[in-house]
Length: 501
Ligand SMILES: [Zn+2]
Image (cartoon, rainbow, N blue to C red; front, side):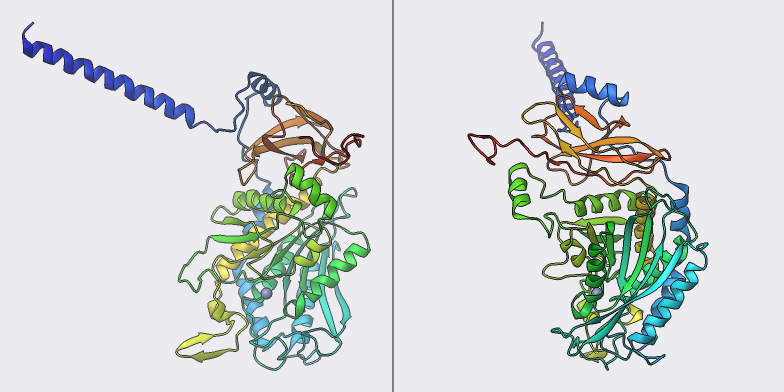
């Protein structure tokens, strides 16, 4: 061979080698791109094939419920605008303002809302009732003398006897404030805080009153938020005293603007705040949680996941931005009194706030317009937030209750049995086990397991995944997920109440 031929063969060989290495690289990339939490154990694969017929799967998008799609379409931004402008026209809705003037003050707002909810109820065939829940608020830090407060509460009764006592609450606060929370005279338009939330709740009541749901929905507007969450606290306390089964509560507060003070315009995002560790956690529950985890799996966090899944399914232009906090940093809202009494609750708020438009006297200073004026509201955005709320509420009230008494019945094992109580709804189809890697934010996998009360995830240890159970009815409506709690263990004589090393 001549030297040129040798060189040519060497070059060819090096091309072949690099092509081979490239192929290897691609194969490695494809393999490692598979979900890291997909169980590789063959027993697991076999188990999941038995369960689903197609092996481990990402949660498939469930079929749409046509009634929920219709509700979402019927929410009308023009009604929301009309409500907000009307509420602003009362000059102030400060909780300490006049209760008897028909044109100015919180009393005028209360009476107008009551009559609007009554008009909504007229479409319900007698299923929606409206009440003024009045109570005397004693003197408090922001209440200089005992004051009557009135929640306006519209209740749409569920039609399934087994579910009618299961209640979902959606709320906004109709009071407002300017710079000083105790100033009852100054103009406090409160177009965003919180005429926006109030208008969303009223519009949901108007649209949803015409439809039937298995469970009961309460559409509520409350005063006293700015004085210290007083209307919501009264409602939550009364519910607790009467053992009302409130399965979820949404507060809509400051959902009015898609433009933040930071200049960001984002009409496609709503923040949903949910707490991880329950506000009413006992020291015993805290000790268990430190041992087995679960700080990211409270009922409120499951509710936030449910809202994200359903909201984004029905309102495809919107992103539900889950925030892992009870509320904004160091701030509070009307969901808190519910959380403190053990109810699952979340807060909806716009993504970027503008503090020049909150809790400010209306004025122009250094060329800047201060005050919570309707010109800063985006009515189409508020309608989209109302749609996300309405889709989630309708889905909750159409679905079976979330499974109760969900536990891991056995101790140390690489298989994970999960056990729960039977639901009582007559249209129940069965249950799904969901799971995710411990670092995932949302449930990534689900498996239908039939109408059973115990199921074992073979080859999947509860050490390595988070599991949950949800109920599904015959129309495909899914409940929120219930996170299992640790089953009470028989006390060990050698090491009572200590986790196994
Ligand atoms: Zn507010």
